[in-house]
Image (tube, rainbow, N blue to C red; front, side, top):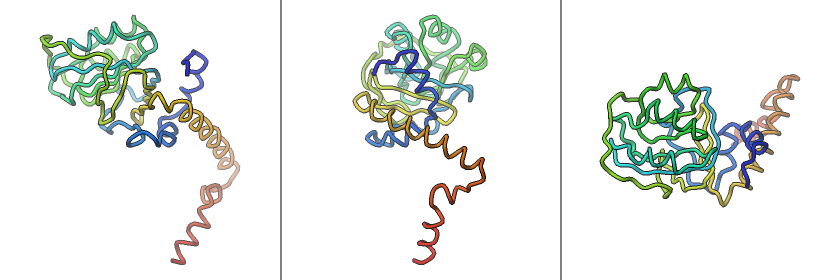
Length: 216
């Protein structure tokens, strides 16, 4: 799938829940741990993953990853869940914006969160911590990583919003997004039915299910 501007607009209307519900071939539906949340709840990101693995408390590999990424990519950064140092800050976020990077998913902590939020850069993190880092160790860039408990490979599609982050394996992306878009359209119809006075019991056929459960 080519993520053209038109395709991105189409897919970006999907909530992560619709994507996860149709991502059944991915372990845990590709949903990262609930600890990975956006700095700004209004954030939304969707793009292909450029990955990096770094040593806890050392962010040199993250600087490498910024310049390994293509415009429109999402950086997925495996800091082994370490939260006692701010691996990523406002200067790095600005460098990403200049580069055209769509956003960052960080299994670790960042700092300068207010400045990052103010610049409108989508940043999803495990925690916030103002402590500094060292730059002593080369990490690995564009290798499979674990972020938020989910394996992410270079080129997988990553989607994030206020509910969390979902990873769609590249080999299943066409099927997953076709189903997710169909579900989204169906739910828009359900919204209209509810506004017209129907109940969720009617729309989903739950009255019949409740009747069966009562007779067990």
